[in-house]
Amino acid sequence: MKHSDLLIIDDETRYADMLARRLELRGCRCEVCYNGGDGIRIIENEMFLLVVLDLQLPDIYGTEVLARIKKIRPDIPVIILTGHGSEKDRQQCMKQGAYAFIHKPLNIEKLLAILNEIREKSA
Image (cartoon, rainbow, N blue to C red; front, side, top):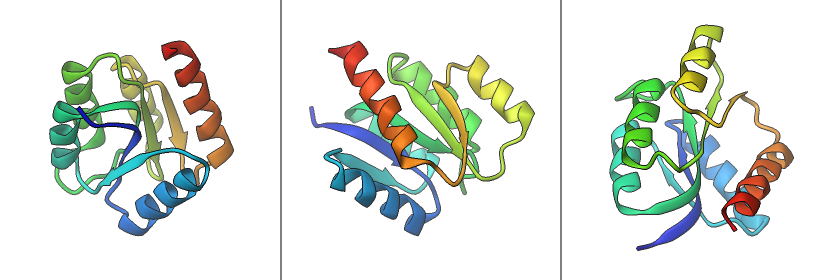
């Protein structure tokens, strides 16, 4: 089974690709997909230390993607990354088991700190 550090699920292709490139420059292995359905299929077949999930996806709203990810792999931490999420979204995501709820633009150092924290816990 293939193992990457991060799966980025975000329909803003340029943003997702740029985030993956920036993380890869810092030694992270990333996989990117651009909708919820593909993200769920990838999670079914691959292992990740962390998933970064956008709420506004073209096919399935992020809270539903989160619920499905948690059903398939309850142990994978999921960070919700959104430019539009409401307080209600935040509460729902945290209740569903999200690791964190972060508004765009993302502070890459904060994300790397979270990833290192997760690596230490899983070591």
